[in-house]
Length: 407
Image 1 (cartoon, rainbow, N blue to C red):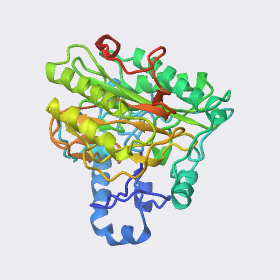
Image 2 (cartoon, rainbow, N blue to C red):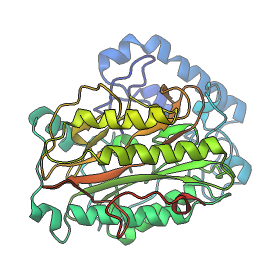
Image 3 (cartoon, rainbow, N blue to C red):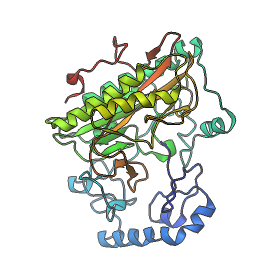
């Protein structure tokens, strides 16, 4: 989940806190990869200021009660009128969307008690994980976790078990009429109850405690005041950071109400793609070979695979090596060994595999507006195969049961 540069046409990740001063005055959160990139593209970027000023003028300025446009153009109070909550954020006024989904406003950032252990990015102004940055510079070998690190009272298995419990709580909240903001509240409070920090919160300034990706959203959907509709498919992506300093990451896609046959086929295919990849996990398997198994399953069901995002190593860091691409003929490095811990999380589309990002700098959607689905587990390579660290209780191998993912 890396924040990308706000310069038009630049897709570099933001690794610092270089912000546009004029955007900050207007309540916009736009960050840049380098000073040089900011200067070079400023002539095009400053059009954002013009649009923002036009939006503010049209809305009559700011209001402390949020009965008009909110100060930052993105969020509003929990007790704001329904019509205010459902208004579009400022960035969306002139944005070209690929599908029918539209963002609503967001609730204010939720608070994590200071008694809970926090990852290094939790209080960073730009949400940068300096430990991950150091790891990228200094380490080329995939970490092998010891039994002590896995099995300690607050070890990696505990973090993954907490993630499973939190996702289960969030999934209970899904129904027609619920807002994704309410799902975020449930997930946030479930994390706190388990003495865990919700890993997405402030990671490169991600504003919420869970990712909720609806219909054409591929990943990194930001919870807001939009209500889930009959026929939607909704992905919940949960990561928990426990008091031992480990992350556990998983997600599932749910069918809400009367989902059409294509939607059902898509969700089942994404489940099967993950299961096919898991069948290959054992010592000696090349990480690049997982993409071939996913490709065969997706192609058989006339679906496509998103290439932009991949699985990743996880544990004491949220994201690290190995990279785990989900497509055929990829160039992933590394061979599996017992003790490796990583995620597999294929993103499967009904239409073409293309993606682009909304103006919130996070929400990744399909270019053709067709739906996307995903399942994810955190996996441990064992001496003889693998262990689903985030698996359901008493389910060592993924087993499809439509009732478990229907609401």
